[in-house]
Length: 367
Image (cartoon, rainbow, N blue to C red):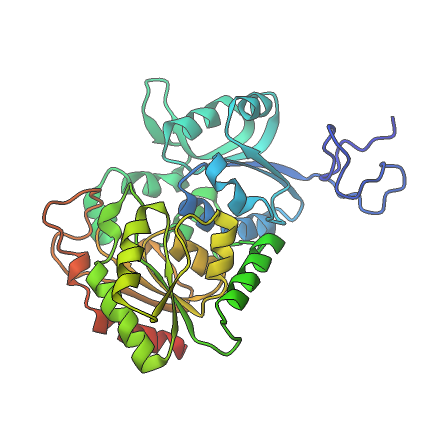
């Protein structure tokens, strides 16, 4: 048939990206090492896992990468130039993967769905997490043992670990970490929405635009900073830095952001809390700096190479790398971090003072 099935661009069910048949095609590239990445969730973790793509390319210059991800995180990866095939987790994708053979499977989710699928897929080599025949999660290779222990040893995770998330997944995958950053391609839709938002709200090129991400979603509400903290900080930013202050958030922050806006007449711009993810990315791209707890907004800002001041209470700051573009403010209360999703007497986040955050913002803007 004169079809080069071994080309990394060949799909079979549709034309390749060049819309040419294989005969004398100048863009033929051998598929190389077939790699499957299973990283389904959470959205912020999916985004920071993209740092591994640079390491894979260094070790395997000729590769073909398939990434399996949950539907809600698909948009974070769909424009990534280093991913050859992006699959959404579901029955069709599972059947497809089980019919294939890979050179390497990287199972990077500590969840039974992804770990179990890793055991079913045929591959020469598997790294990361799998499920044992007796029903428990376990490390598939020696390089994954430390990351595995972090999940079951609170002392190690909370107090002793100094490794970032990126260092951990590189270790699991047997790759050399070289301070590799996230890869988030700003889509044309995100860029256009951000430009339109800036024009609508008269954000000029030379303006200092600071985004305040006020919440942390519904699952991990303990991560959010206080409303009073954001109100006071916004006032300081407006009066002392003449900053244009944007309120960022999702559906869980609708009431919170409305309250903050009502308390700060003509001080903040409410960006809305029901923005599709691509629009939200476009809004963050308008910012010079973002203040956020340990949330997806923080991860997006890091990926877009924005300055970030990150606030930590119940979660581990050690695993986050700001790549020298900001500061982490870590609560000093004895019970933090704890990773509790609810707390009747939360002290960690309220212990962070607005003046402390403002000082970190000023230092970060000089970097």
